Image 1 (cartoon, one colour):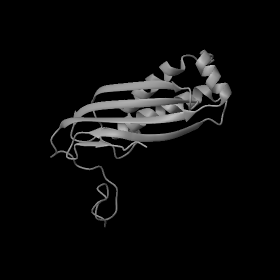
Image 2 (tube, one colour):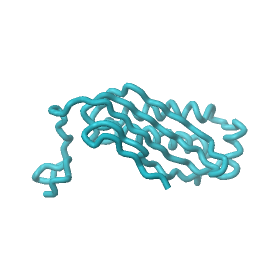
Image 3 (cartoon, one colour):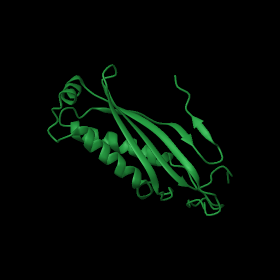
Length: 161
């Protein structure tokens, strides 16, 4: 059995990693993702003409809730007490897209990147849900971790292109 696969025992069965001996340290993670919009969807967003309500408020609320429920959605994630969640949503004119950025912070024994990635994913899915009547073929893409701080690896940053 590959010793790098920390969520599998010697029989190959999945299990949640025991972090009880690890020391709690400040942790944070920054993630982002995009949803590409058609011209019609983009114009409706820009004009605030969304029949289901406040698009950005709904996406922000969904993203915050999702980050807090990550361990319920992803089986091998530990339940974390988040000390801060920041969700930024930007309308990107040149890309004709909406970008969601999520920053999650905690003081814990394990990282918080799954919470940030989950926040971005659910925020984007909420936007899709609210715009699908205008265009059912919107594209969600580039969901990725940008930065991770804390733990034994210190600070990890994605190199930008």
